Image 1: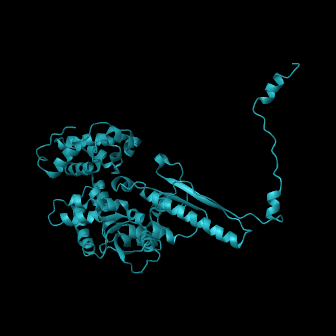
Image 2: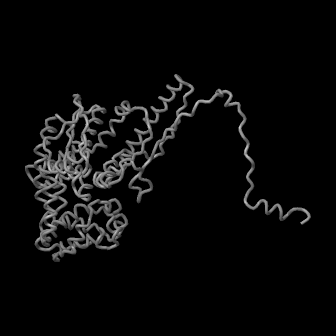
Length: 439
């Protein structure tokens, strides 16, 4: 796709980059097959190919309209289209450039500006956690629609205090410590079981993704620079070997620091190195399978686990299947320990019998609990056969031991089995009557 840049965008870094990205598009339309907004709305302009055409027009000097802004705002930035593009179009970067250009040309309505400002300043501000605690204190007196949006207060649980030889820095983010404090503490406990000490990053700031995706490029860069100043000294000195992020959307943003600050002489090198030392939780735990396997306990009661692989984990971090494989390996180890535990117990008490139906292939980890609560579903509800296989749920069930009988085991084995009557095939009686002799 040929693009003739307008004079005001010529010789600019973002204009030349956008021109190169648009030039890779061959109009094949494979991207529309995996775009959720195109599948839902059926409008060509609500698909990646249509949005590329809109951005191309803006780059060539056509004045953007509110309709152009609407179609770009509807993009979820899931980057699912990039997985099916045969030409390697980096649509995620292109749509960020397009939104920034359209934001400069189209004035938003007052209500829209107020909402976006509230999201930018409210979610990333220091008063988010106190406001949430106030809402939780008066939750029972709030109207039902607002009450459904205010989560119940949760106990974060114990934080391991043991010193370990391996240490990593954990980014806590802006809203997760207040909304789901259990995630960070659970991460610290799992890493402690793997022999890794988790230290909380000094700055409890936003990674910059909220401002970046709301077309506030300068605000996102300010937050990125502040995070680099707070995190890099611990990694540079060797105190921590890497930055661990347990929210894939934040990890995807931190990985972009090197690209976003590539033209900043003071931060370009540090941003690039920090991006290289950033790890998702699944990347670190994949190399700790032996340590974690030793910490597993025999499986107990029946369990139902649902896992939702977010788009940022699959498409931005390119880690599709990593969590699923790690969870499946853990499930196999737990089942092996459960079988060994049953064998040891059977030797001590041969009368007791334990039965366990093994989980099918594809046993996944339990990140779907938080998603279930957000969606208003029970946390333990299994999700089966969901669209496009986004959710997978399996269950293991342990049948109760059979009641003891008066007959011994040897008598039960020698008891003759009942014989079943032969079942005639459909239509066999009619055929027999039809060809009976004498008829």
